Amino acid sequence: MRNAWTSDVDTISNLPCNVLDGILGCLPWKDAVKTSILSKDWRYKWVTRQELDFNDEFFKSFKQDEEAKRIIYQVLLVHQGPILKFRLCRITSCPDIDHWMHFLSKKNVQEFTLHVSLGNKYHSPHHLFTFQQLRFLELQDCLFHPPLGFKGFEKLINLDLVRVTFDPSIFTNLISKSPLLERLRLRCCTNLDILEIDAANLKFYEFIGKTKSISFRNAPMLEKVTVAILGRRLLTDTSPVCSNFPKFFYYMPSLLELEICGTILEYLIKGGLPESPPTALNNIKSLIISSMSLINAEVVSSAIYLITSCPKLQDLTIDFYPVGDIVEPVVQLLRAQSSSYGVVKLQRVRVNMFTGLEMEMEFMKFILASALVLEEIFIWNCTCFLFRSCKQMIDEMKEFRRASPNVEFTFEEIGMEGGSYEREEVMEVP
Figure 1 (cartoon, rainbow, N blue to C red):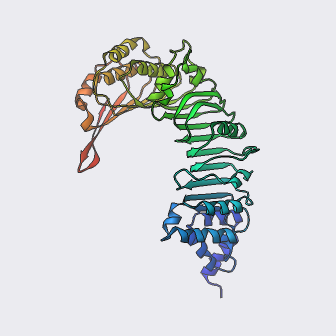
Figure 2: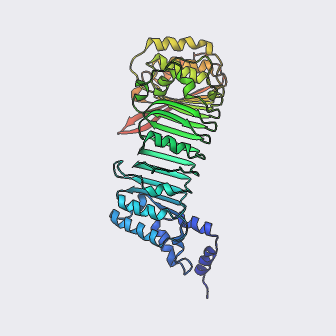
Figure 3: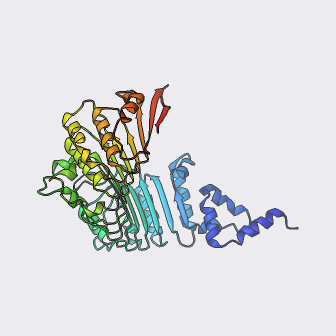
């Protein structure tokens, strides 16, 4: 007699292959293999799994990495059919990776992730450059050197490189030969003298690293940009004869979200501010400025120019860089912004590391006077960094001129208790 267990197994076995693969893909490897005991039909279903994810959790489930590697060899040896997604993390052996890549080169891999733990000394295997169906590529801690005659990844959509060393000319060639590329992330990779982005389909771009010059030469579809410069190399070797503003924002008419650091503000103002703002600022709705220092009047001027040149800007987030002294030129510069009344369409403003210094208060005065439809301002900091109490700041801000009559303030202080941060107080001003 067939019992309920047998009936349930038969029902699952008759599901479409893509549904079965999805079920198996949600299971850890050991559990996926255990499904072979459910029935004869299930005995070998796991060997057709199209997504192989050997992540940190997989390696942690074994006492030694060698045991984990033997399992990977066994899985690949018996595997049948295509492998659309392959992820390998925390691997430390070059020969093993090379052998597995040779096997994968015949499996029509579309998504490939490799995190190496070899101190950035591992050369990406030449078999990787034969993955003609590749759509997603993520590499971490390795050397990226395509062979001579490499024609690019024609179907690549997403490229993510972390601490990867490469020749700048090779990188430029790779981008130009990836016509479908939509997402590009470069984090702590090779230092670049000149970083020019020419990618017609690119929609998302993130750069964290070192470079001397940045320009978005051709990015008509680009919607979100994040740029953070490590150190001051961008500024040291830059001596423009014209403004960097139009060079940086050369052509990205679809830009909606921009996140930059204070160093970029210094870079943008080199050569002066242009009379007419770049057209790339016309559609920006969200602006984030991190590590913004108020000790440099040029940086503050650059920030004000950027904020007031985005006619559709709705959300602004600023992380102030802590300073201890009042800089009078900055105070005077901010006080001179009275002519900016009602010029921006900001709705929400968040300010982190707000200490209550006069320069910061003047900046808030500028925001309140400029934003005609402002709805809320959120201010955050640790109690130990505050130069004045929340009540004092509230009382002073109540006297500021407001372009928007409906703006609400929220102050949040985080205090240190027992070695950990705790939220102590939230105040609102109607």
